[in-house]
Length: 635
Image 1 (spheres, rainbow, N blue to C red):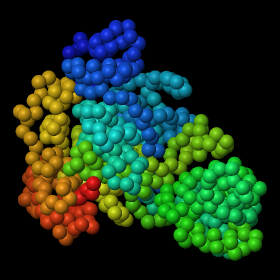
Image 2: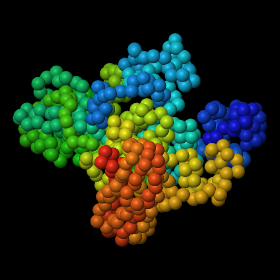
Image 3: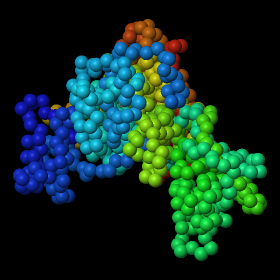
Image 4: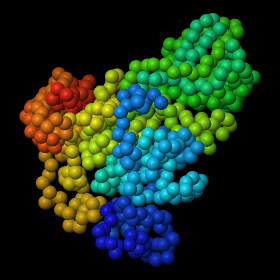
């Protein structure tokens, strides 16, 4: 996946066939083994190879990397209002219509209202693509361009690419990660790549898509929650999380616990209290609402036994809602769950009803429990994720080819669904980036990323992982239009960074399409991280070492012509932060000034893993904020 040669006579497919023939030893077998050649945005191919053939191919000159194909996991309204970007906001509609957005997805449903192009004009002159049909897709219209969204942004390719999370193992380096390589080529062409951080939270060291030229997006919530009420026959009520679309047919239903619905004699293992498969008696469950202790999917089991509904008591309640296949809700087992269990065991004919879901206001924003956390292990001194965006209970376009729950027996289908995941957060960030690009078409990918990060709103509600979960905070698209200062980076900056990280000169040369690149001739970038990043992060290794780090930064003035910015530091006890100089005097727009940030401190207390701090540059109008994180790993 290297850069294409400049030579116009170069034929990628012929070159790929020759490489395969050398590795396999047979020209015909080589042609049959190749699945696809890539020869537009980057140079590479996909082929079926035996392990020794792959190793032989890797030995060839000008081969950057060879890695096995992997199965990628998808990380898969109110949110824009919550972000301060309502429909009534002043828009740059003419310019916005010329922004080209590429979406990498597994499929679309053309009857979704999102693709209604009423009132839209022709594609911008820069559009060079075409609509191509494929398996299960015959939706090309009479024009030479695809469908449009309702937000004055044409769905094409080339200004900004959104990846729905492509998995890359933490042990892999950038040159064996197709997302990192592909996004590097995109960055070189002025395209910002937005990727989801992953859905493996809340554990630390689970964040994915961590290349510094990628915008890595965590999932946070909005102030809207979907909750479902349970009414007991004794007048008491409980409330939990779910999206229950069923309207009750009766005022009350018989209520039983899984423990009381247990089979007299079981033909297998399982916990009846948790409503495990095979542990319950259909005769006892039929027509009743069942209270189960567990984690999920009990609704499928109760439906199979012809139950009327399910109440699931969980010790660690979800912060997002799911759609059950029968009336259902998740409640806190330690509070409402105990009350329901007591009611069942103290009442001869316990009854309850599960109401239809309603929306309520709740505390926000905070990072979703499922959102992957840092730190990362590839470039340990770069904070990832970069920022967060709404990814909890998001109204999303959906296909009628699938049911709302994915269960074939479910007859509910719609062009919209409520979904949660970092794949819901990622498009919010990508859209915000496109919005900023529409006002600043000359800004680089790094500049747009900087604007989004330095204007992000810190989490109102923090957990133990702090910025390792949220990055700079939740996106604030309107403020990102006027960030004041930008932390910019160019391709040369990233090349110097890769050299500092120890990547092979020839491999970097293949990646960028430059022969003879030699890292020893490139001045190593200064500082702990060696990159002009909008956030600052260092890991203390070994864990009993003193805190010592220096970050060198440059900022470009994109605010007022003559302006003075003063540094404001927020740091916890035990961490000293010095900014040199602490005042930046700009004489004009696009002027660049540099400073350094020095971190010092004794070894972190044994019980402390994270120091959260920040640097803010303020000129009375702009507040340019960078999170500073010191992390102590425990291996």
